[in-house]
Length: 93
Image (cartoon, rainbow, N blue to C red; front, side, top):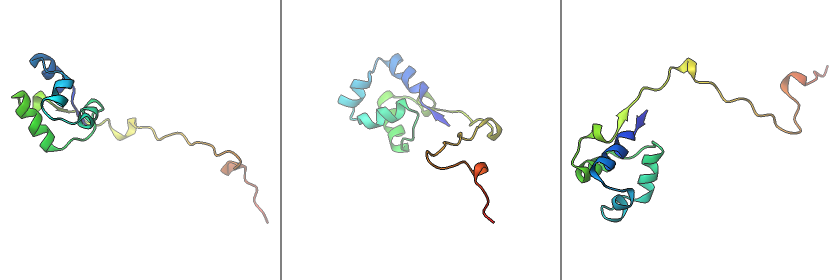
């Protein structure tokens, strides 16, 4: 998983606000929102941010491995109103 925590530290260190990124450097509000949520951004956006901040990729983002599969829990089944559970169905002969 890619996280952008380093970006916020770099912005703070360089005294550049999110407003300034949007207003003066042309980064879209949607991209800033995606960065806040650690969602996908294009390599072009990473390149633009590195140019604006005069920094390297590691100053913006960091790779953290996903947790092992056994730690992930499947979502709990949601009962559907009006439908009996599978184990309660009667078998017709």
